[in-house]
Length: 225
Image 1 (cartoon, helix red, strand yellow):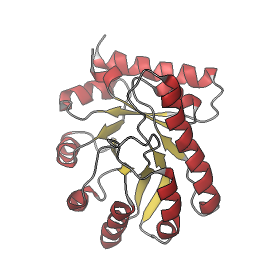
Image 2 (cartoon, rainbow, N blue to C red):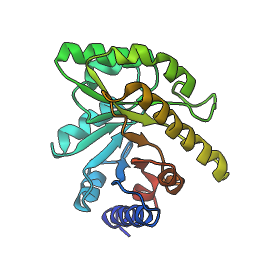
Image 3 (spheres, rainbow, N blue to C red):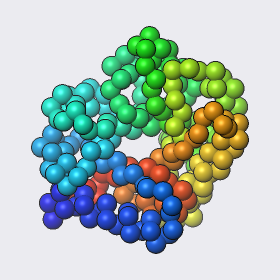
Image 4 (tube, rainbow, N blue to C red):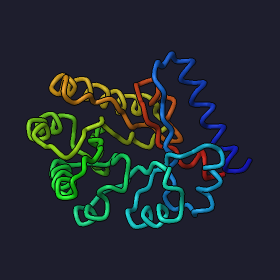
C-alpha cells in the first residue's frame, strides 16, 4: 500500500468511526509530516491531504517553499521564543502553546506584524514530568491574562496522552482536556468559542474521538510501514 492509499484508508476509518460514534461534527486529520521528504508529502497530497503538521520551524519553512501554497500548515512541536519571528504568519494553527509566556510572545510578535495568530493551548493533562504544557489548573488561573491579549485567537486546546497500553489512562488524559475546555468556555463565552480539541495520534485516535477530539495528529499510520 502506497502513501496515497494509506492516507485515504485512515481518512475512511476516521469517517466511519466518527459516524459509528454519532459524532455530529467533522474530525480533521492532520498528517504529521515531520522528518518526511517533500516527495512523500506530494504523494499524500495526491490522496487529498492538505493539512500537514510539522515540529521544527526551519524544516517546515523549507517544505512550504517547495510545496503548494494551498496547504494548511500546523505547528505541533515544542516551541522556543527565539523561533517566534520566523513562525508568525506561516501556520494556519499553532497547537503547541505550552505556557502563558509563550502565548504572550506570540501575541506581541503578531501585533508587530499586524496579524491575528490562531493558537491552541497545550495542557499536560496526565501530570507526566516529560510532557510540556500547563496543567488544567494553571491554564484556568492564567485565563484573565489570556483574555486581555488581542493578537492571538484561542481556537481551543491540545494535549498528548501517555504512551501506554492502558486505555483508561489515555481516556482520562483526553477527558481532562475536554473538561478543561468546558470550564474555560464558561469563562470565555460568548467572545471566544474554544471549539477545537487537538488530541489523538496513530495509536489512540479512536479513544480521542470518543472523548471529543476535533483534530487528530497522525503520522505513523500514514508514513510508516
